[in-house]
Image (cartoon, rainbow, N blue to C red; front, side, top):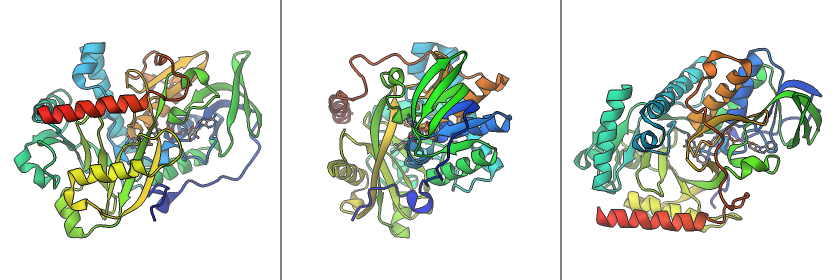
Length: 427
Ligand SMILES: Cc1cc2nc3c(=O)[nH]c(=O)nc-3n(C[C@H](O)[C@H](O)[C@H](O)COP(=O)(O)OP(=O)(O)OC[C@H]3O[C@@H](n4cnc5c(N)ncnc54)[C@H](O)[C@@H]3O)c2cc1C
């Protein structure tokens, strides 16, 4: 029997909060109680602002307790792509901000004493082709020279010391990336925000936001609230309360499977360094050992767009066995999915529109970015000079013919999958 809930929930499931009537007035109202909303709320409450945070589900039940816990602060476009699109200075500022955000997350966890199994394990990115390996080797050099990041290429004949597979043509090992237990991290963040005085309301949807004399009249499921500022922190779970944003963020299903516990010997053979893993395929997979090192959590896209069918789990099982043939037929204990939020240029951003402040669009890398962007959005409201950010882009452009149903995803997956096959054959 495969559990359809996150493996993480065994240690830290999202909890229902007692229902209460919200205060009629507050300085800042936040829509969404995931990493973004709580990080913003924590920062504002510690600065003495009255803050109310609403989530239509149990707090954390969005992506923040479902993810892989890989603390990468990834940017989807490569450095070269960023440079071509935005120029050298902006590309470097984005890469430097990712580094600062990763370091800030580690410092925050230590400062707040959040027991979330955070460890700077390193991350290996497997090259799907020989050409990808050459590109990764150049990237390692660039990371070392321009940002002082401890990164180096691992050739195929040395790969077994990092990852027990022949699937890749070598890869890139970065020692500035690690992993955490996402649901334990969420629980620590929630406790910190509440202790600071932020009021959190679970299973309480925000239904409408209407500008009113320089403030906002907000209708929630538990009554009206008037707020001077509103932060939208709904990311991949954005609903009809903000149809403008819904046309700009595509919620994409990502799924993770957890294997049954594996023997210590097998884990040491497959993941000798217990690193986080990624790869260069366009339809890429991400995977990692569980924090206690006893099993593998393996994630990738879930091509379904309705219900919870079995075939995306089987697809992941097949992909796992392609990389680790010894795991063909291994028992799976959990399989779950959640929404990541993609936008047209695949860059997280913090922006304002019509008086509303947004921190969204992490493209599957919000463990580092969401907490960071929430904090930045709060600093913007506080007029704090630390608010400055390279993520300060214009709002994401609308996606043509898209109003909330991602009808085009199957075609996109087919196209990317075909490119992966072609590249591997050619490479
Ligand atoms: C399967 C999976 C694997 C992932 N793996 C990784 C990983 O390994 N590393 C990484 O960095 N990132 C990963 N991510 C992405 C990461 O989890 C997210 O980027 C991050 O959690 C976003 O946090 P958030 O607070 O912005 O959004 P969420 O945690 O999604 O919270 C948004 C909340 O808004 C609420 N909401 C929406 N509308 C309303 C409304 N009208 N009223 C009230 N509340 C509302 C929702 O209920 C939801 O709880 C993964 C995501 C998934 C789904």
